[in-house]
Length: 193
Image 1 (cartoon, rainbow, N blue to C red):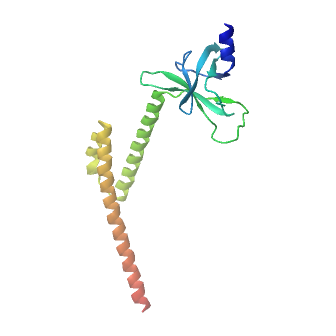
Image 2 (image 1 turned 30 degrees about the horizontal axis):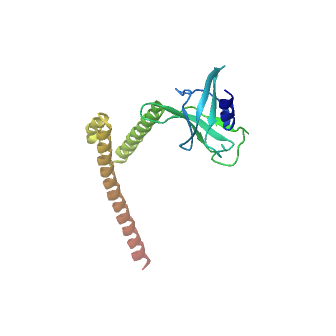
Image 3 (image 1 turned 120 degrees about the vertical axis):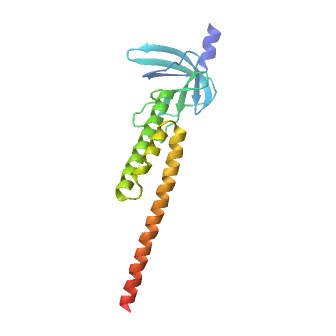
């Protein structure tokens, strides 16, 4: 026991309270910017937070004050690691050594992707309404629009063809406006002579 104590005494130990550890266990790796530098040695529930103690086993590694701490996936099997990221600036308004952050989960990323597609569909719909009101496109293409809901590939194919048609119509409109402007300029020049 004395040898084990003396061995562990040589390493730096840190503690942090996290709101959620998302499957982190004793022995999970601790990484600094993706490089393994230690392991989690203790996890306990304390009130509404989770107490995490970890040991840095790499010599000469110092964690910069204000580093962000979160739990992330480290492999395909769902294993987790405690990830540390240095602060983005030299300022540390909280004065803390480690700043906890909620774990990064796959379903959060999928939710963000779903919101992004919803916004793209909303923008496409608004642009379509605008172009319909301006007269650039006609409503007869609307049945084509229903097929894009079947899969993301159909949506992308429909969007590409729709954008190509819209760009073509915009180019024609721009050419017509330029011709009218050139015609007005010629008339002004003729009137000036």
